Length: 319
Image (cartoon, rainbow, N blue to C red; front, top):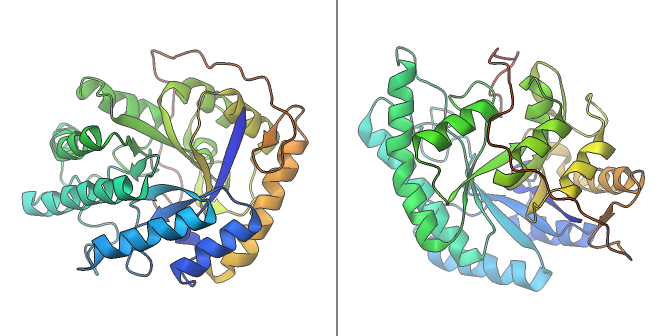
């Protein structure tokens, strides 16, 4: 099985988008995790449609695949990080987040993206768990309807400190919604190391049937801090082998949103590290450097969620 490596534009915010895309193509990445934000493809700009077409042409000319990511910190509210969320007490504020995600689906359709990433948000103070889940299911339904119409999956990410923080939380949402077809999972490998009881390899195997997007970086147990490869505790060759053995065909995107100051160098170091890690696992290859295909094994479809811990790690939700 082939892995398709990408890099997130939220780690290249000091570069113009055209320059960032050119850099990634030159380094050998196959794709990009494109965060809709003011410095790149601004989802609130009046010329969004034309700018999206320009980005599509640029991606096509470079041969890059794309996932649309929606984790911009202040794109809706200049004073509240990630605000408003799908869990906001104000229904109009929740509707603004829903509208942004629907717009992201439209952008993804125009770009030919393989998925749209999102997350639930943090439960507001004074909000009961039942109320938070009710708000989430109601707010996300129009987004899933848009995803269904476009044929592009919505890949929700378990995020430390959020209502959906673990794989078990993802499965809870899936059941609440009746297991809708457009709903998939963004699996962040570092988050697995940070707070899941299962190892990253076990998380990949358990979640394989629902994988629609993968983010990857190093991390330490109990500390939600995205780290360059080699600065954390993850053993990457078996992680990459597990991804390669799954049915997942989308991008595996390096996620270093707090390292834009060193973005170009880290993009180079990251692809070198991942390629080296893959060569250290027998039979694993990248699409760009491969000369022979590997034998892939199909992940057994899990029907129950992986056992997880719900303890909040230190530094939850710093992204």
